[in-house]
Length: 111
Length: 116
Image 1 (cartoon, rainbow over the protein chains, first blue to last red):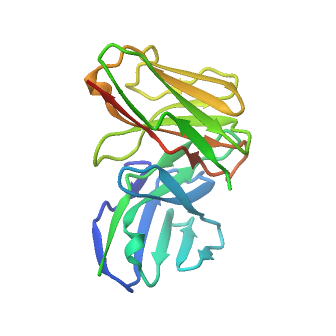
Image 2 (cartoon, rainbow over the protein chains, first blue to last red; image 1 turned 120 degrees about the horizontal axis):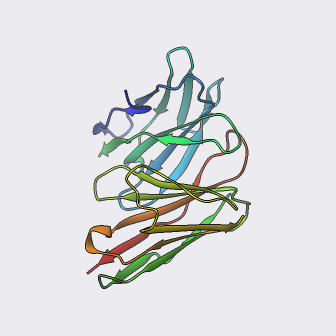
């Protein structure tokens, strides 16, 4: 089993739709969780950290389910500019924590 | 926000040349820096992790004598691709992170390396 697993997609959704991605992780001792987005031929950019109680940033909501070992990202009112690959990142505990990237979920928002 | 600067952004050179890529954290102390490689339409592949002042830890299959990493200060890490060949052509991306739990990585803009 991979350390971090994501559905590669692509998810093709119309503008204005709500879309959700899940990401599962295998290490129950994982302590830090992030979502990044990566545009084609560009570097990944931090979208948001994921906190235990869940957190929201505008149209984006991230949730953590430790019991089932997954994190989710919900995007409401999708925009064309949301089209990108979304990377799930999971980190171990400790100051020099090792992080593991998922392979990414591709989202295509269609006009 | 945290800024990571990576240079050069694009390199085209002949086979056999050694290429040096710099990664700098501009407004924070990067105790840990990472080097990734990404081939077209593939996911990021971690090459090595370096903590400031220590030798880099290389991932399996990555030749440490081929990809020399130096992380001598809290704001600078370098990756040198020695005697580069066409198969080394790729998108190389660095990231940097401050010490502490729950610190995210911040990425440089990447270096597109083309070996002729």
